[in-house]
Length: 83
Length: 83
Image (tube, rainbow over all chains, first blue to last red; front, top):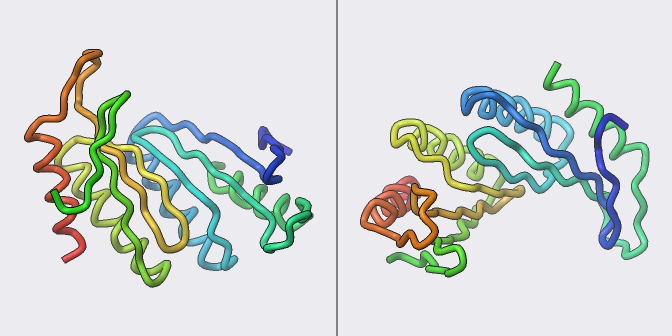
């Protein structure tokens, strides 16, 4: 994975994206919002003027859920928004 | 103040906005983004499918900064985005 950090309790993927300007940050958030709607996945997102922090969790309420290829694929799609 | 919580260390105003749908959440975020650009203020924002959490801090690096009318005015402007 390209700089996504796998964390536990709860298990999740996290990544911080940094940008040079607020315009770039908003552009990324717009593309990300469109992708989330297409995929019907709505991760936790926090952002400020020049950064976006993303947290991806398994789409289930099971307590012992694990990260699957679904999360890895979604993470890659998000990375591709920055290309 | 209309449901903004004043917190200390660091001093800040916080509020959680809840929405019925992702569409409404994105609409609010779009309007908020425009307002931030006009006011040149970029608060910390975190959101998920149907909520947005906002944190407003004084615009200064001074350690003993206090919340001023600027923050209160900005908070009111943000509230008005939901009218």
